[in-house]
Structure formats: C-alpha cells, structure tokens
Image (spheres, rainbow, N blue to C red):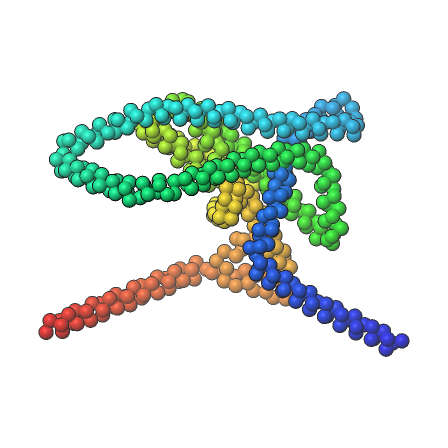
Length: 470
C-alpha cells in the first residue's frame, strides 16, 4: 500500500512538474504567434470593434450621463422620502424619469452649443467674404505706393513679375493642359468616390450614435444589475483578497475619470462664460463664437487653451490687429486665473499628478489615440501611476522601509540592524558641497584638456601650412 501511495505521489509530482513546463512552452508559442501575426490580429480586433461600435458609443454616453441621472434620481427620491416610504415600483419609475431627464439635458446642451456656434460661424464667414475685397485692395494699394516711391523695389518687382509669368506659362503648357486632357476625369471620379465615402461614414456615425443612445438607456436602466453581475463574476474568478483589490482599483478608476471629466467640464464652462463677459466689455468681435471655442478646447489639459487661442486670434486679426493683441493678453490672464484659482478649486488633487507627469501622459496618449488621448490620457495615466505607487509602497512595507519620499532625498545608504528600525543615512552639507566642488573640478579639467587639444591641433595646422609654403 505504501509503495502504491508513493508511486501515486511521484506520478502526481511528475504530472505537476511537466504540466507547468508545458504551460510555459504553450505560453511562449502563443506569444510568438501573437507577435508574428500582430497585424492580422489587430485587423480582426478592429473589425470586431467596428461591429460593436454602437455598444462602445452607448457605454461612453451612459458614463457621461450617469452623474446627471444620479443627481436627478437622488433629488426626486429625497422629495418622495419626505412624504413616507418609497416602493420599488416608484423607484423604478423614478429611474426611468431620471434617465429621460438626463438624456434631454444632454441633447439640450448640444442644441444650445450648436445654436451659439452655427449662426456665429455664418455671420463670421459672410463678414469675412464682404470685408476681404476691401482688405485686399487696401493691402494692394499700400504695396503699390511703396513700390512706386522706391526705384529699386520697382525694378525688382518688374523682374519678379516677368519671371512669374514665364513660370506660369510653362506650368500651364507643360503640366496643367496635359493633366486636364488625360487625368482630369479620373481625378473627378476619385473626388466623387471620396465624397460618397465621407457621406456614408457620416451617416454610419449618426446611425451608430442613435443605436448608442438606445444602448445607453438600457445600460443606465439596468446599471445596478450589471454592477452586481460584475462583482459576482470577479469574486467567482479570483480569490477574495485579489477580488477586493480589483474592485478597489475599479472604484478608484471611476473616481479618477468622473472627478476629472466632470470637473474639467465645469471649469471649462466657467472659463467660457468669463471669456464672453470680458470680450463683451472690451467690445471684441465674435465674442460668442470665440468664447465657445475657448471653453470647449479648455477641456483638453495643457495644450487645449493654445488650440483655442490660435484660430480665435487669427479670426480677430483679420478684423483688427490691435484687438487681436488685446485678446491674446486677455486669454493669457484668463489662463493664469484658471490655472491658479479656478482649476485647483474645482478639480483639487483629483489626479495626484505633477505638471511633468500631466505633460508626459498627454504626449504619450496623444501619440497613441489622438484627440481621445488628449481627453482621457491624464486620468488613465493617474490610475496607472497610482497602481505602480501602491505596488512599490507594498514592497517597501514588506521590507519594513519608509514609504515617505522625503526620506530618500540626498540618501547615501540605509543601515539595517537586527531588532532595530532602518536608519536612513543622508549626505551632510559638507559632503554635498564637496561633491559639487569635485564635479566643478572635473569639468574644469575637461575644459583645460579641450583647450590643450585645440592649441595642439592649431599648432599642427600652422606647421603643416608653413611646410607647404617652404
């Protein structure tokens, strides 16, 4: 019996040993397959994402409308609870009413933005078309007067005009006319095809958005059920400790994203209103249109204000260059107010990232996902940063070391003795001064060596030249 048990245990051990090795080999083969067929796998994933695009739109719309829906739901629920207990039927009716009001509020905001932007765009375009001939004539007259009063400029302009005429004749005869005879029709067909494809993509996007709104309604209506199912699945798959950690970081991600995005929307709305009031007081043109542009682009961290400033300043520059300068000064002051007062008051430390990591996250995710990366890059990187920081702190705690960053400033070494706390030995002021002096001496020595090399090469060149002359 003992021999049989021993034989069974050795077989089990061998099985576990070889099965572990087999899993490693299979994982290596799978990794090689993924790397070697990365383009094909990427295209398959893209195809599935394009099929599920309405669901993705629905998830995004539901996530954006969720704070509004919760606000409406809590408000109505508090009103009903004052009158007595609220039944489950009334709660479900309140949920439906809150979803409807949140959806209508979102549509109302979009309609108001379009109502503010589109008429202003039409007015701007028409005024630009009406004033452009006069501006061009004034510029032409100014250049003409300058040329007439300067003989050298008149001669150079005449030469340039003749050369330009010859060049244009050559381009028309050698390139434009043959292109019109041979390739024009095919180019027209290509433009028509591109236009049709563009129109179909717009209609497809509108259709996906419509389906996405329906998906968002279902998601918001069954939110509590989906959350319960997700928790059930996490606790079913992972151990309790791991499941608790997963749920903790999912909640952290939600807090980061919702706090940052909602805070940014509120902050940008206030910035847009202040911009409109200031531009109206200063009587700057296109106040409504430019304020909306500044407010919308302010949602993008760091680069957003500049993305809104450049086209807005160019728009005012066409009307009045001095007013464009006033506008640039106004936006510079407004961004200082936003960065030092409004932003910290509304957003607070919602991400916990320094200015460097904010810039780093934007550059990283813009390169990966474009405009979407600009918007979600900061909160996403903040979550990654927090997970890494928690992992490092956990490892430090296991080693019974400090998690406070200031303890590691100017650190030389950590001394550990049995039964005692770790001692953090830092460089003294004298040692730091000595290090600086040593660095300075090193650089001075390098400069002296470079000077000696330069003198050596100069002497060598001079001696070679003298030898050539002899």
